[in-house]
Image (cartoon, rainbow, N blue to C red; front, side, top):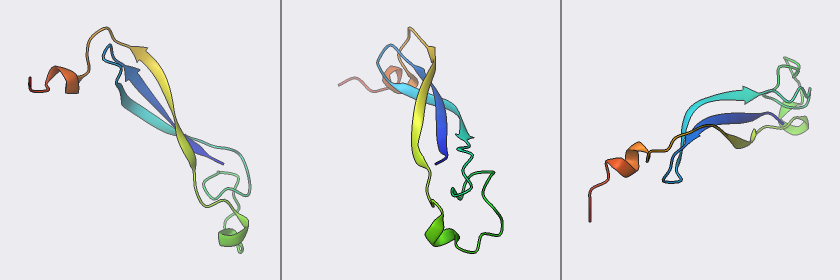
Length: 76
């Protein structure tokens, strides 16, 4: 099944903030989201996968600072 790859930055506070994403094509003719899926597909609802696999997070940058949410959070 196809899935989304989400590229993110990991900050010193441990949070990961996404900055881009893309769909990764599984190449299956039985996946509704694949470019290999036939159109029109007469049995699509019963014969083909109708959902994406869970998104996969990929850390592409690491920062030594805290994220925006942690640096702007009100002190308690």
